[in-house]
Structure formats: C-alpha cells, structure tokens
Image 1 (cartoon, rainbow, N blue to C red):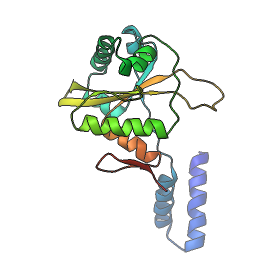
Image 2: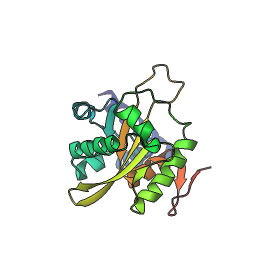
Image 3: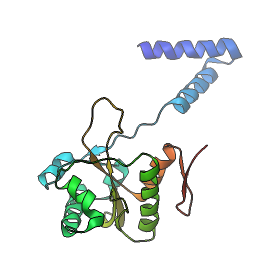
Image 4: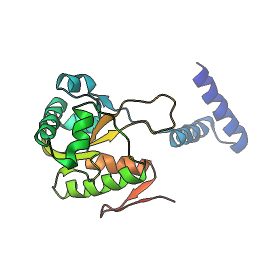
Length: 199
C-alpha cells in the first residue's frame, strides 16, 4: 500500500511540475524508476549437489547457463578434470580450494582477476580450454542441450574489508556472461578481448 501511495505522490508531483496528464506523468515516473533501479542477478546455488560430489567450497551458476546445460554433469566434469590435474602446478590453486578445502586468497580485485579472465575468455572463445595463469579460473567445454557449451568457472571470495569473512565459491558462467559481468563493473572488453576500465 505504501509503495502505491509513494508512486501516486511522485506522479502528482510531476504533474504539478510539468502540467502533464496523469497517464503521461505515470509513464515518465515508471520509466525513471526502472532506469535508476540496480539490476540484480541471482545466481543458482549448486552447493548441495557439489558437496555430494566431493566439492569443499560453495558453487553457484549463472541462471542463463543453467538453462542450457545439466548442472550436475558440469560439476562432475569439473571434478574429473581437476582430479586428473593432480601435480599440475597451473591447476593446483583450483584443485586445492575446490576439492581439498584449502584456504583461498583472492587476487587483488579487480585488476588481476580481470586480466586473468580476459585472457581465459579470449582463449575459450578461440576453442582452447584450460586453467588461467593465476589458477583462479577454468574454461572447459561441456555438452549442452543445444550442442557444445563453453563453461567458465572462477573462484570468488568477498573482498577484504567486509566484516564477516566468507568462504570462497566457484562461480560457473559462460564467456558472454563473464564479459557482461565485467561491463557492469565498469570494465570495457572489446571484440579482441582487450580489457580496460571505463572512465
């Protein structure tokens, strides 16, 4: 009820200012509210399924990717890939955090992780999977509902400075969604995969 009252008040204030009809003023007020709203992307929590498969950290997935793939099959594939990389220095960080539950120190956000992600996305879009140089991201191809899908996984931990330290999570997304995420953070990624910060 209060939200409706507030909306009516804003509409009537605009009418008084502009002399517009109620419906016109309402249209402009609603359009302004939708522009100023902060978009929220709610990730799917796959932590229960991941724990059953031996994961020792939380796992979340972008909803668009979840519509195109079998999430449990992706978790199994990531687990199998990491288990085959035991002893591989490049994959050690992911293996130790995701399957062994070791402590994770997040790279300095956003510069290090953005650069790591930019390079991995460029490689993934060229058809090359693997682990990023810093060991925080992984790219692999999985069978999706409409064919082969590239999945990007990156370790994320709430940045230092937050009062309650959080456990790291493995976030699963697509290269396109990762570029969109970077864009929402003010990181510009052009068609060549080069990244920079928006002024």
